[in-house]
Length: 156
Image 1 (tube, rainbow, N blue to C red):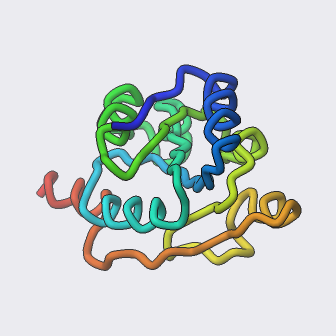
Image 2: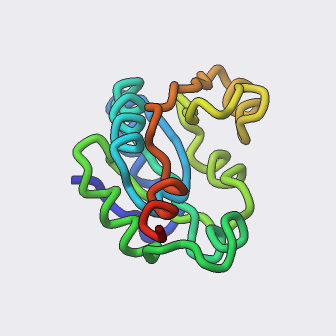
């Protein structure tokens, strides 16, 4: 079971200790408002790229700014706990900024991962990660799964 980091500083300390033992850190981020099988497949695939998977999770305020006033449907605490319960997730840490750029600078992942609707050129933090020899990967989406479509189905 993963850990929900109480702060970025706590996460950095944990990662430093684990890196000293040779662990390779993979980072991704998102809202993960309604966790669905597409998310699970994506996170499992991301975790296979290294030894530890760190998820930067948008705070409730950040989700509202991105998705609108009716989102998120689940609180940041609930979303973090659900993600941390997945076997493939090692750490979950919240971020309130518009993008995870500052968090990526703190984590310094060996691999930065995003889903298939991105290109490497559009991934926030990609130039930074590449600057120190890290990898940036785009993983394909599992088609047919989307939080928005689940919400629309529930409404109808």
